[in-house]
Length: 143
Image: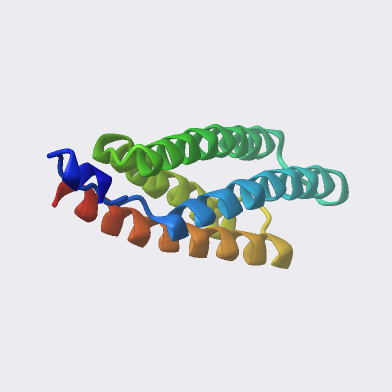
């Protein structure tokens, strides 16, 4: 109301509280996912016959996933808070790449335990929810 009295236009916040909360939850879950997956890869390399080339590939992809997740969450939170579509769109693209790596750990890694499946399915669910909310937020920012 004060902005309208001063001759300016009143502005409404377009950032999504639900998206911000989901990004915070996803950040915590991704850290736990990374740790649990790293420990399971170490366990599988000790208990099962795990070819060294496949072990190196799985570890490399896990660390790549960790870097992608940190970057994705940074751009997502920044884009949402400053109501900018470019960082949020970058986060959306990184979400797709991160989801592809999650599918690798769900289906295509050398040895997949039931715990791997559960952890990766939860991560994919979070990615899906975030992607939908990011698209909605980008649409709100553009309009």
